Length: 290
Image 1 (cartoon, rainbow, N blue to C red):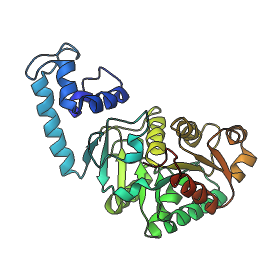
Image 2 (image 1 turned 90 degrees about the vertical axis):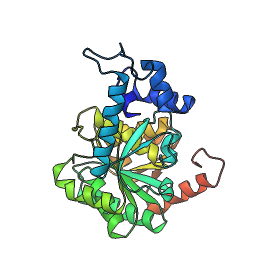
Image 3 (image 1 turned 90 degrees about the horizontal axis):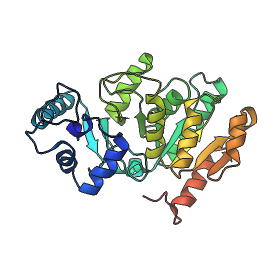
Image 4 (image 1 turned 60 degrees about the horizontal axis):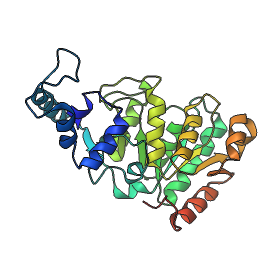
């Protein structure tokens, strides 16, 4: 899979579908680059041979494993099941820590980096309720709302997954490096990017798509019209996942009022309203059931 994705011929989303269709990354690699040992014309010159690409990939996998990073492909049984069900799933994710089957029962809690004290309190209250109801709390390890959601879940001895917009070898924001390490030690940190990848303007919306895909639903606590949480609202609805907007957010933000009227969006005032809806959907014939 690593060697295949490094060819860079197609968008990664296309490779996810191709690999599932063919049953292996090797089959797709052979189709696109020719038999192992042959020189490919699809790579910039000077190009590595297929054998060289594979050898480099094996070396990288060993190095990443030594650093506590594991590669999980869309063909692996422990690839997040909710993420597998969405159209824009990545063909692989890197994981630091341990994913559990119970993490399929998860809810994303997201919001502003520059959060208000009220927003921090609401995020903590929601995360605490989710842990009490045996849900895994998913967030993006950003400052503000994300940090409150993660730290509350950990302090209540619950599960939390951090889906980050950099490679696993980096931490953003830098001040959250200890929190990232703690989540990796106790739960799991997930990234769709090469381990050394830095933060970019494009990487964070991509992270939001994976975050909403991993979770059964997304809760937006606070977010401006330029926030990544607003982007995740759109992405989650496109993936067929319910979105919960806090009533206080709808009162303050025009974009939230616009989304409040869309199918799949719920305006809530108490954490119990979130889990009541999700529990009902999970016991119905909803596509939420993995």
